[in-house]
Structure formats: structure tokens, C-alpha cells
Image 1 (cartoon, rainbow, N blue to C red):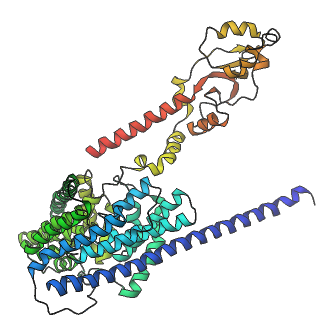
Image 2 (image 1 turned 30 degrees about the vertical axis):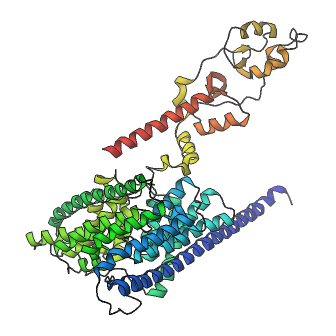
Length: 612
């Protein structure tokens, strides 16, 4: 059979083989992400049990305090008959701080604080690597901190369970740093999506929380989506389906209501800035105290938390039940204000001192409380416009976390999934957009980087992207005019010319002044130190006709690859339609300098934009 007749069959077999390869690869990666989701879901179940047991035995049995749960949860054990004791609430957070501090600083110091920030830092700066012991230490330390009265959220430890397993699995499989980062981020999405029963938001959050600018890590969304759905299903199979909070069928029907929502956005921004400054002010204060060992500092923070809790018990632990009451419009304005401001203080003391816990949960409670305040005020002023103060609680949850985290899109979906209030998407979008624009300089996640430009994880990718954007034509003012060496020039004559020039690369031309070869100063060494043959050599003999060249239309990434092909520092630039006409020489140094200038310009524009 002639070769031509075999080509269709050969191409078909190659396509079939490629298709099988793609299916096998997709199956393998799907298995990885499903495994991450299973572990994250099981981790969520284990942590939820730990928290329920801790609240029963510490807060309820020791202090007679049993905070209400949200509508989507219930206490696992019946309430005790222990009378309420404020003095126990004063010391319990300090005792929890002692245990948590010893555990963290003895076995995994990087597990202090809120776990999402540690995962962000690992993504950008550590190739997605997380020590295997960190999730276990984080889980136990957070459970102790939160169930003895410390204020924090559940997403931090759960995010680190999923992220830690993703990192562990990638390391064991000897995958690349990029693949480990993706698997680690998928674990973050799975953990957060399962514990808050918001799988879509969990996936988007894992991709959005990495940057301060409105940017997504696109390659994370699908893996995190798979892991998040699996983790959510595992968690709900044990604790039931449905949303974390229950809300009436809120509807947005009056455009005049956008005015009060704008006021809510500004209130949330002010509260958010206060929260971030208080939180990091507390961290800096405890870091500045050098005489006290680190493992003792959480106990001091716990004592300060207990002092606030002595007067405001509702600011301790999670607080999700009070957010539920705010949605149901069961709490008065003074109570809501004390809940919001007290929660800022207890969260800052509990986690800022080195305790362990998340910051998303407290943000939901604080934002919901301030939303309830604004909603009730406007309901009293204009009851026909603001008919449901509880709707402001839901929108306040989304707007506040957006103001402190720079994650507007995922937060809108988060709150919609957690409260099952999808009819409030429009006011949520307005409030979150305004809150984001007004507070983008502030973030509770200080490990976020501005954009992909600033992430070490994307340094190489961004280098290629920039160079592919520009062409040699953009550097034509930097292309150097050089003298062409006649191909029949004797080497003796060239020696005299060489002694008077600083040129390193010498294009060779024929009688019609067309480019036919090129040589560098390295190529003439053999002749330069062999005087017995220099009388016989002409420059055509020295130059090579295998010329690596470029044209004005070629992109700079391709040009840089040519520089590295033979380790050369300069390329001839010729006309695209006639490679015999030399336009000049382009140096490698000029390309790199041009790249650095463009990066600096882009960073300056981003900085100016963020400051405005």
C-alpha cells in the first residue's frame, strides 16, 4: 500500500491515542480532587463534632452558657442544668488559650492565627507546601480556642485540613509546584464549602481570596468545584441537607430601598476598617511584647476575651445563632451594636494573640449585626420602603466580609447559599461593589498579593505573557546600527578595524550589501592567535551562514528563546520580506530592560489605582 494511503489511518490512530490519553489524565485528576473532597468533608464532620462536644463540656457544663445554634444546626447533646456563671466565662477563654498556645507553639507554630492566611501564603510563596502535622494541630487548637469561649470561625481549620491533604497528596505523588498549589487550593475550597454548606461559593472563594485586585485564579475553580461538591455531600449526609441559616422569602421590589442599602455599605466599610485595624493592631501589640513566651500570649488574649465576655456573653464562641436571630428580627438595636463591636474585640483578642480560628465566621456575625441595626433604623423611618429589616442582615453579611477580604463575587454567592436568599442578589451586588471599592486598601488576609503580577507563583508565566504582548518593532529605537563587514575583507584589514571598535557581533555582507553571515569576537580568537594563517583568511571564512535572526514582527518571547538557543547576546534584525537586508542588531540586555520597564509601569498603574 502506498504511503499516501496509510496517512488517514495513522492520523486516526494518533487522534484515538490522544483522546485516550486525555480521558485517562482527566480521570486521574478527577480522582485526586474527589479524594481531597472526601478528606475535607470527613474533616468537617470531625471538627463539627469536636466543636459541639467542646461547647457542651466547656461552656455549658462549666459555665452554664449554651449559645443558640443557627437554624440549619442543632446541639448534639441535651442541655445541662448548670446555672449561668459569668465568672467561669471570665477564665475559660484564658484556660483555652493556655492549651491552644502550648499545642501550637510546641508542634506547629505556623498554625497560629487564622488558617486561610497561611494557605494563601503557602500558595504564593511555598509552592503549595504545608507540613503534614499542621492540619491536625490546627484542628485541635482551634476546637479548644473556640469551644472555651474564644471568638473565631470554623473555616480556618477546615480550610487547612483540605489544603493540607491536597499538599500531602501532591507531594507523595511527586507532582510539580503548580500542581501542588492547585490541589492545595482545591482543599481550601472543599473545606470552606462544606462547613458552611456553600459548595459553589467555596470553589469561587478559593480562587478569589488569593488576590486583592478583582482577580481569579482560573485554574483553581474547576478542581475546587469538584472537591467542594464532594465535601459538601459528605458533610450533609451526616448532618442533613439545607442551608446554614434560615431566612424568610425576602424580595427586593422597591428601587428606593437602594438608598438605605448605600448607607449600609458605608456603615459596613467604617466597621470593616475598624475591624481590620483592631485585629492587626492587636497582632502587632502581642508581637512587640518580647518578654512573654509566645505560648503564653494566647492565654492573655483569652483573658481579655473573657473580660469582654463577662459583660457581653453573646460575643463569645461562634455567634451564628445570634446572626439567625437577627435575620428573624428578634434582637434590639443596642444588642446588635454590642454584638458587632464586642465581636470585633473578642475576635481580635482570641486570634490576634496567637490563638487559632477563622475570621470568616466572626465577619458574618459582625456584618449581619450591623445590617440589622441599619435595617431596623430605616424600617422605623420609612416602613413602606424598608419592609423587612432582616433582609439588611443578609446583605450586611455579604457586604462586611467583602469590605474586609476583597472577595466580592464569592461572598455574594456565599451568603446567598448560606441563607438561601437568592432574591437579594441585586442589593448584595450593590453593597458589595461599593464596600469593595471603598475599602480595597484594607484586608483581613494580609498574605493576599495585589495581583498575579506580584505573586511569585506566577513570576515565570507573567514574564512570558509580557514578552508575548510586545514585538521587536516596539524596540526599534533600541536596535543598534552596526557596520557590515565585506565577505572578501582580509583578516589583516579586519584586525585594524577591530582595534578601533567596541562592536561584539559583526554581520558579513556580499558585494550587493546583503547579509550572508555573521561572527562574534569569540569566533576570531583562533585566527587572532595564529599569525601564520591570518594572511590567508578572509572574513567570509570566519562568519557562519547559519544565521539566527529576527524580524520587527516577531514577539519578544520568541526572541528571548533565540538568545538562549546558542547562548548569544545579540540578534540581527532583518526585514520580514527580505532577510538579506539588515536593519540593525538587538541586544539581549535591551529586551530584559524593556521587560523590567513594562512591569514597573504596570505595577505603578495598579498602585495608583488602588490608592484612588
